[in-house]
Image (cartoon, rainbow, N blue to C red; front, top):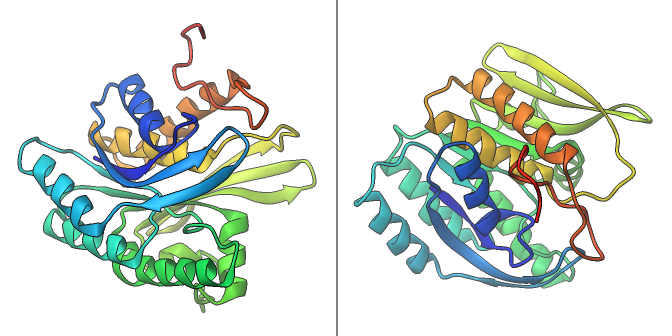
Length: 260
């Protein structure tokens, strides 16, 4: 089950996650959290779905189908976070993957205040229930600078200190041309994947990784193995990236199959 917005460009979230799920031999269910106006370059507007509607749709599916994992993408109101956190608590036997992204559009003061409220709700209610949190290094650094996350005392693994069991951090800088993806678990840093920084503008890789990890968990893999196989899949998708418009390159989510 995937909670996320509808991205009409097909770059991220719904319906792109449905393609990822199918590519990894899973049937993806979608619970809409927002509608967006966007293309391959920019997001122009976001219309959040009411938390009541989110709750009704999710519980309707949960009562009907055997669900094996939950992935949570972008959320835009504290009420939506609260509803999903309650659902996660009611179905705490299901692995939960959280793609932790910058909430909403912080383009003005009101939007920035709302984004901070959403982030605070995620840290308080959802992150402590998360099995694997996926985020980008630059965003974590910014949240620390803004005081939205607390600097840990004994470890640099901020998101695990905030409550997640495992954290997968993308884009940690090593050198000017090299980045790494780091997986930390209960025993600390477990694995690291190094890669060369691309000069091309790509769509949100973290969202794709989170969906792939959730699909692997749904298939019964252990967290470290699920992440490893998800990274391999995502690397294949990025190798076949394409540019459908004037904006970012998009990952081809069916690696090995010819693009139309």
